[in-house]
Image 1 (spheres, helix red, strand yellow):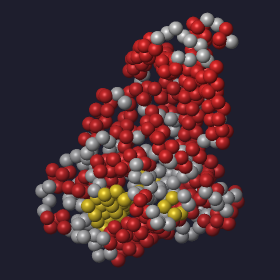
Image 2 (cartoon, one colour):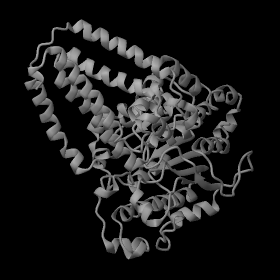
Image 3 (cartoon, one colour):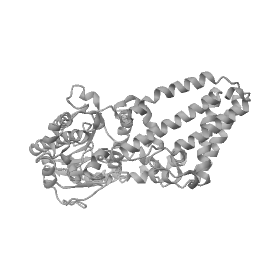
Image 4 (spheres, helix red, strand yellow):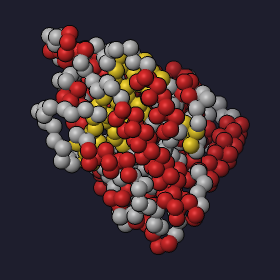
Length: 518
């Protein structure tokens, strides 16, 4: 039909079809978005301007209107599909910083693609065929110079920037999406979050870390004080939380070491984390930086992507007291840009997956037992210099549904709700038991160790097991933490043994006080 029309009619028809189809796709995004009539003029115009920009960009590159329709809608549909999968698994819509994770999804597909359904994955085949067909059949020659399309791209981009400035977003993606729509909010976050003004503000916020002035203050400490400093070991345990809070009855003794350390330690309680089901680096950055995740504004969604240079943080505070600072993570060092970020935060060394080439696995990832071996080895190699070791485990990382479990295993681990084994839950509890065994080994080793040592252990977030929680009738949001030492410690300001709910940054600051670096 298109080739029977004049070139202008063909072009306008393709453009209008792109706009209308994009409006229909926007309504398919999760969670539920506001109907178009309730959004107001600005968000509607912003949506239309952005979709038009995509259409014009395809025209500038290839000059084929119906291929521009297929390309623009294909990108938009992909974004909606990924958004819906993310919201189902992690209770959060797609945000602008997720674009930085695209390359990681290709390098580490197991961490991302299993959350897509088979139908969604299979849809890629006809989608590619549609693009190829649209490109091959759309041979119309439009008498419009490429320079005109690029100029129109620039004009539409300027219009988007102007419209975004008037958007009053709350930085709660679910709430904003329910008010203004999916694509409008995505574009607003993208434009504002990467604006020069916002980038300057987040750098200023990093410099406002409570550790920013530590080096000046601690430089006055005496040498004997430094020599007597305890080693400090931190374990950020993947997806660890006390699942008994959901009402699930574990078999006796399954978290015995965790309970023992809580009762005999310096403090324990729930940890109010800024992530659910994933996004470990949000909790991790808050703990290391001393900054509340919400204070980072647009950088809160992917803090490590914004750490561009030497940044005040907990490791910097330990280095100011002559500590050797080491990070340990049995996975790819470039994941979440840790290979670049950790040196900027003050770590002297990063022990990554290469160190664990011959280590034992528990499921698809390096086991907590292997990480424990590594930590004990690092502590044994001490040369008299105090150590700060920050370990990030990987064993209990999802997707849990890719691992196998049996009813017999469930019976050995927990009392099954309604008498039914739940595969995700069984796999999770299996790895949870291994995390508890890690704590038992560390406690036994540190108890007989001569050097003073402080242990901090916490979960980065609860695991994303929405169907399991529905079965249990629970909605856990907080992970758990504990502080323990192998020696008696004098009372310090802010130290309380009673169970308290802390945030990650508060936990990091409390640890710094215990170690005497604040």
